[in-house]
Image (cartoon, rainbow, N blue to C red; front, side):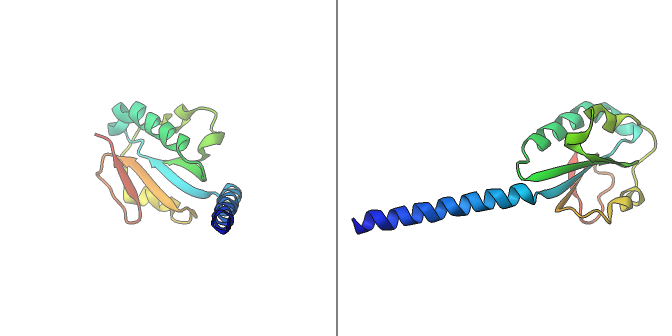
Length: 129
């Protein structure tokens, strides 16, 4: 009988830990910044990038996905009226200076969707060719 009581105690402690973690992470989600290279050379990849962002955002249970382009910050992905607004402009080339606008953004991870021509420090690159 003592073994059953000890086992139940561990089960209860485990459940309390899981519920506590769920409540905390739901109230305090981590932010992830996804920046899209909208240069003219990347235009053929826009459909694949859009699909990648939608899949990425669908997988994030305890994270808020912020979306921006090399031109401007667009905001939280879930509040965008359409994912096509990310790709409304396609001109110019991506440079590391354009990404400096996101230096002050408080996020846990920065992801750049691009062709790999620019990789600034502190960014994770998802390469589309």
